[in-house]
Length: 132
Image (cartoon, rainbow, N blue to C red):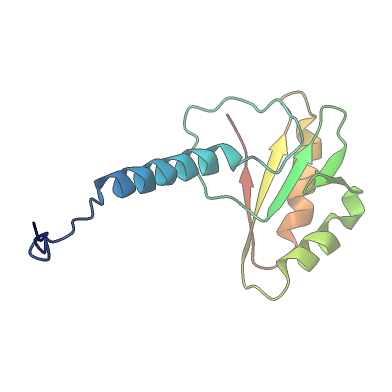
């Protein structure tokens, strides 16, 4: 009669290389997906070109001015007289806030200046102009 030998000397091996490959594939997927999810919070406006434009981090406060001169604050239509109050409400108790103005290339320059003038009355607000 043959007695089976005890194979307790052999250690079990777990190969983690496939798991690492899956984790890196998931990480790559989420990085690529998050890059595509970063969208602008402004209306569809045709921005002017600027060679000397710099990049800025996203802002909580976005003001868009369409070709007809209509104003939208964070994609919600608003009257120009209500802009300072609404921006102050969004700013809250923070010492500073960054406001990005996206004016269509065809919008009247005076309309953009009027919005900037109203924003400059708010203490702690920094203003930026979006370009392509």
